[in-house]
Length: 417
Image (cartoon, rainbow, N blue to C red; front, side):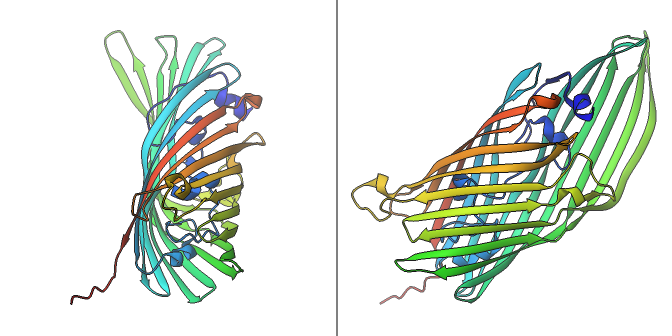
């Protein structure tokens, strides 16, 4: 069984690398980062239809026109992930703390807005040890380890040609290196050591499109419908691979290269992606969001080949925000935004027909700074991914996110008497 060969009997070892130590990150492009940031992270990640004026919502570029004409927004975030891994025979814990993203956004004129930033797209970071025994050869040990990150530099532009319709795009430049290596050791000293070092490098541009439709209602309420999609963007990829055999003697060692491939250039075709969102809100009081998000990873190709460990991703997210009294003078607690949410995701990992699922609950606060529209966002997520059945790995995790949304007033024409 493929899953058994991968994870059983496995002892997991953590290494500090980017935002993951998960053995699942060995496959595909690694662990995919969620599309939500800052405020919406505490709301289950549901944000595709949100039009909150004091946030940068890169998940749907159509949302940029929600920014007030005098506002300049700058946002950055830090994330800590605390995970326990468990198989049928072993367990371990790991901690990862990393700077996560930064973005800025502002209005160009009354019907156009823009945004710039850099965010993580995926992370690889694992160290898995497999022990076994071969008849007439003896015990052996295989170590699989890897690291790397694919980042996403974003330039976004949105227009609002009609009061109740906004459309936009993100020009994404995805780049980074993913290294995946393995080493095979035999217990008998007269047998060889086998090493393999593989590297994938990605760089290129792609487009994401988004649209939002606004339905105004009485008492400062509104309903927003949102949609985003990407039509199989193709990125340039470079893959290199080398396999070496090492034999040690009492006083010397020989190394033989069994296979060597310098960087081979090709295309990595990302999946068709579509997402739908629904947001119902009352200005300065509450917001209720729901998202459905789909990526067709079963059709993605890596230099012309599909990956047998990848399948279609489906995500459902629901979140709420409530502010008791946003402009309260006497009580700072009434100005705080209280947020909570839930998510369920069929991830893009699949092993022997068993898809890896991820469930999490989120909650957090948006704390306004004194005499400012700037906000400190604090959120936590508790969740579970995978299972110990079928010789797989279950991950119980807690994520803590801290972000600052800094607000300033620009483009003001001052008069001097």
